[in-house]
Image (cartoon, rainbow, N blue to C red; front, side, top):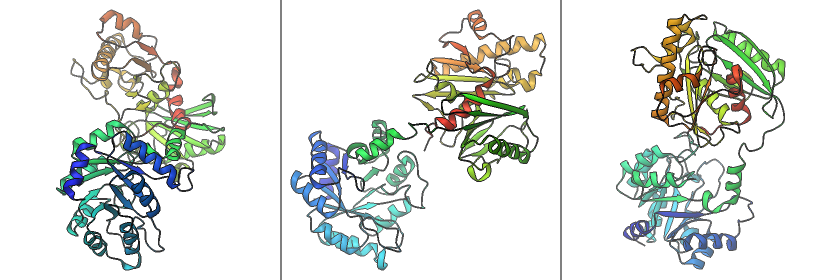
Length: 483
C-alpha cells in the first residue's frame, strides 16, 4: 500500500474502525472481533485498526481489509506501550499488515530503543508508518524521522496535554497545521457531530473504537452517574448576602438547612463549610457560588464577596469530594432535573443580590470551555444601565421605592426578551429574592408588554431554596462538563 492508496481509501470512507476489546472482555477473542470488523466493513468502512499479531492476522485474513496494526506491550521502566520495541514491530510485519502504528512521543522507550530505528525498519519492509502522537511537538518529531502519516491517538494520555472528556479538537487542528501528511483524528469520539467537525478541521479520517466495537466501554459510558448511592449529600449556596448549607438524601429531599450572613473572609467561609459538612456527616458536596468557576477554582468574581477570587472548592480544601459551579448554572441544572423541565431547553433567571443566568439544553449545562456561564448581568439595558444595576438586590436595597420597582420591572421584561431572542428557551424559571418578590409578577409583566417569542416564565418550584437544590443536584446528579 502506498500513501496515495491510503488517501484514496480515506476519501471513499473517512471512518476507520478500531476493532479491539477491553482487557478481559467477553468479546476479546479473534472470532468475535472478526465479526465486529465484518459488521463495520459491511457498512462501508475501508480500513481497520487492530491490536496484537493474532488478531491482526485472523481479522486481516478473514476480511482482506487494509489494516493498521499495533502491538501493546508493557515494559518495566517505560510508559511507552504502543509497539514499543523492534520485537513488536517484527511481529506485526510478519502478519502482512499494510501499516504499523507506534507511539511517536519523545518518551524513553524500553531498553533505549530509538524511534528512528523502528520507523526505518517498517519502511524498509515496504509498509507505511502510522505515528501515534500526543502533541504538535511529537507530530513534528515523527515526521522528521520519516513517518508517513499521524494520528492524535495519545492526546490527553500523556503529560503533554490535559485529558478532555471528548476528542481533543485543539490537537487535531494543531496537527493538521503541522504537516501536509494525512492526519487521523482519534480518541474519545462518541457522536457524529464530532466526526464531522474533525473532518472539517482538515483530518483525513477519524478512527473510532469503543463507540463502535466495545460493549464494555459503551455500557460504562451509559452507566456513568446513572445510579445514585444512598447517603447524605451536602449543598452549599454561597451568595453575596447569605451562606447557606443544606443536607439532602439520595432522593433529592431536603432534610435540613441553615444559613448565616456571608462571612467577609475566605477563611471564615471555608471553615464554616468544612465544619457543617463534618457536623452533618455528608459524603460529598455540591457548591453553587457567584463568579466563574473552573475545575473547582473561582477564576472571576464580583467584589461583593470579599476574597472570593482564587478560592478553590476541591476535596483538598473542603475535605470531601466536591463539585462547584457558577450559581446561575447550578440553579439551572437543578431545575433541569425536575420532571417538568427534564429534556427541555430551560433557562433560569436567578435575581437576588446579583442577576444570575443559566441555560441547560439536552440535559447539559451550556458553558464555555473554561466554565464561563452565559452572561446577562453586565449587559446594558435600553436605559444605559446594566441589568444588575436595575434588578440586583445590592442596588435595589431591601425596600425599593416605587421608581426603583418600575425600572426593575421594565428591566425584567427586557431581560426576558433578551433571553428569548438569544437563547430560544422552551421555559424560563425565575428565582432569587428579588425574582420571587411579591411586587414582581412575571406573568403580569409579560402579558402587559406582549413579549414576542417569549417562552413561559415560571416561578421556581423550589422557591427560595432554588440555589440549595441546584447545589445538591451537582452532588447527586453530576452534570456532564466540557472537555
